[in-house]
Image: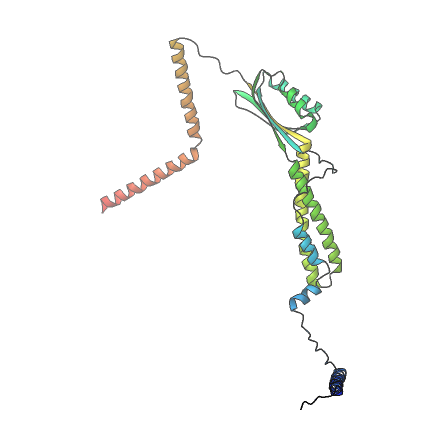
Length: 307
């Protein structure tokens, strides 16, 4: 016999399952709402001593050091709209020639230099009986350099040497000027930091940096001024000389030449005697030593004879 279950049992099972699921969900929600989150523990870290020291330093000191270190030492390349720097060219010339009239040549050189707007920086004149020679260091404006050199060498019968040298220091000048401006800006930053210093240690540290920067600025200024002077006034090293008349030529013939040789020999002997006479203190000491030694020798000889 076959037994059949009614359809109502199937529906009853499904309803019981849904009730259990609903009850479990309600319990889970109640447990979640009743759970209180634990407060998060906070951990405090002690600031290292180095960080504290840096925080206590004057504001901007580290930035100033970093800016000084990373500042560009060379000048930045010129942009298309930036004006081109003025050229700095140092010109020097060296001139050596012979003249017929020493005094006239001296007056002529002084007149040319004066009309060119220059001046004689140094002058050395000497002679040895066979010639007169004058050496001059002349400074003339750079614009009048070429014309002055041309006037000094014009009309010269014998020119021994003429050389001109030009040195372009524009790049060095621009680079040094940029370095100095960077140091000046850094100096101003340190001055601002010095006003904010709170302790003696901070003041001494900033002043040490300022001293080093100011020394670099003064050195740069001196070099720039030197290049300005050298570029604005060119230098001419001039040397001229006059050969003087030597002694009369020897007379032709054998006997006159023999007589001249005897006379020169006698003059040499006289010169030797004069030179030896200049050593008379030494000769006098030598004579006294000779007499003293001779007397001692004689006395020793007599004492030996009597013994």
